[in-house]
Length: 325
Image (spheres, rainbow, N blue to C red):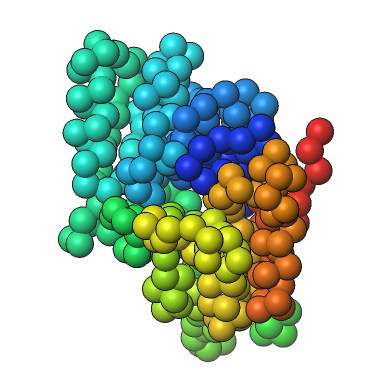
């Protein structure tokens, strides 16, 4: 999996960070998905290799502007790029009205179909060719969701040595056994193909969370998860100085849950503008404070997302940062 952060700031952009947007592409796939689409997301894409006509799905965690105000321009630009393929947009109740009203008022027309699906208690599971995706309700000042992305498992490897031990030559019988079929040998022995296939290889699992005051809500879903991407709007020090009207997490909140679940990889994002360079010099805040607060509670691999930074999650669930060219 390839994961690129298009925006990592909370509420408003800074000189270093745009507002929320995450691109995800599966291995051996030219299509890609977008999670949240803050203002100017389409500008950020100009600095990447992601093609708008190849964008197949957009998932919106919640309807605060820093997560969805970029939708209108991005979709219009996709049409101007002569995209013909349909696109699916999935988000909280209200996203249909938001989009349809805007496009009606602005007389915006498209060369492709837009399938809008709203999340509700009876509609939380979605399937795409490469994975299943489940929306999990979070705790925020508006309806907000995390998306659990579970890649399909790979078939187990064929036990070639066992087949050789049975004296089976390479050929059509191999094919039947690989498909799990039963085979009768000339001797009369019946072989069950299931005995010649190793256990399936679990697909990678990641969670991309929207704004959320209570990371513990994700604990039931973090089992066998390879990566959690979660906001860390504040440190505990900063949170004590501001109103808590917006229901966000601190780095400590998220790190405690990550440690409790023993998840191997954690990427923190959606940082308050208080940690921007111009603001932090005056107020003596530092983005490094976010990392140090997380590391005090969490012993796994912890990263602070940066705009236009790409991460690779390989088949073994190992996370690495791709060097930016």
